[in-house]
Length: 238
Image (cartoon, rainbow, N blue to C red; front, side):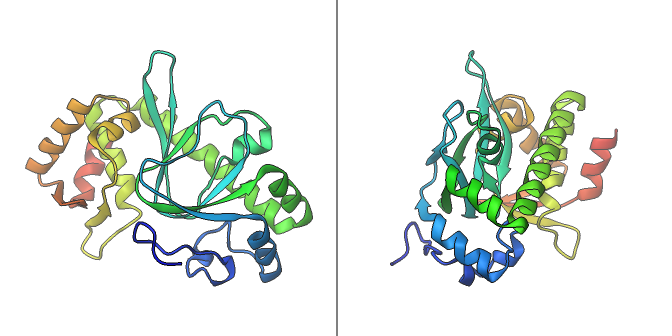
């Protein structure tokens, strides 16, 4: 199959070049062969919705490439992004094992691949293989700490500047350069960043301008360069 949205479908987990980097997929050969049998690989465009908040859990999506935002909305229409998931994350796991509706909406922020595993197949897969049960427990634990950090950021940070600095620091930790700077691909709009840190789009635009003037960050097209971690850490600690 030729590339779709510039991506080639990775149909075989055994030959995936990134599987050892993704803890859920870093399984023994026999277990990976079984995983190949129960999942369905597909490429999704930007803004494709994998599942909706409140929908009954049909199964999980293993994010193989790209990013997806997880968000929840109030009846009044206010939206908060609880996490931006990365390659290797398993989306919908909490709902599947609790047998409760999806607590968030999962939407692609760029073209990417997600492999779907039906709920019944995943439950049997976990029951048959102890190492899968361990990976599931690890992912659920990570989900818990992500939610905990989100609550800390929204509830204890005193200003939008502090929340924005914390977000930049979390991004820079994932892509450090040798000179202390970091470069990340910015796939989120100002509106989406506002939904992560609990503020308005206008405030995020102002923060970008302020942080640029202070030489804390730089934008080159869709590449965000985070230039001064110590200064960002000082904002968080102030």
